[in-house]
Amino acid sequence: MREVVAGAVISAGRLLLARRTYPPEVAGLWELPGGKVEPGETRGGALERELAEELGIEVAAGEQIGVGVPLREDLSLVALAATLVAGDPRPTEHSAVCWVDADALRQMAAAGELVPADAVWLDDLAGLLT
Ligand code: DCP
Image (cartoon, rainbow, N blue to C red; front, side):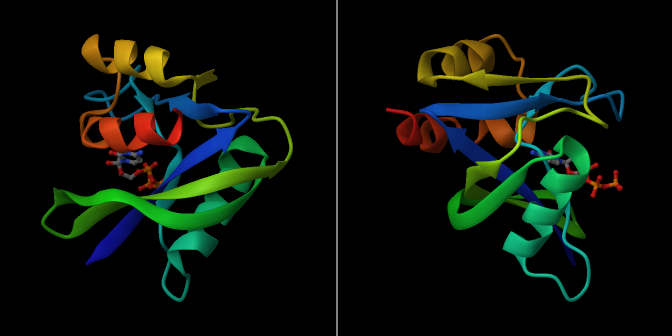
């Protein structure tokens, strides 16, 4: 069983989203950025590493948000709150990033612009932003 950890990075009352480029089913949709937890890593350590690699930012990982989401029989997804410590996100693997408030997040969800797994956390995320 492997885990993917995604970060709800909040700065100045806005949430960071990143636009995926692969696989085709989710290319063009927005996600909480993250990646797979490697053997021997904590969830928080994995998130801090992934966001440094993918976006060039330093974050401090915090508590879990919402429920875990099964992705496949051998892979599950968890979200952690995170605060931006340093840096301005510059995507290396995503096609774009944006910062959203609760209203913009809800509009994107209603328009089907979020990765399906992450849409499960809509109320949890909006709650962090209000
Ligand atoms: N995923 C998701 N929502 C997120 C982050 C990831 O649904 N907020 C899903 C998409 C992929 C899987 O998790 O099916 C793995 O995510 P990544 O591709 O971002 O992770 P890695 O880069 O670590 O994996 P790989 O190297 O296999 O691409």
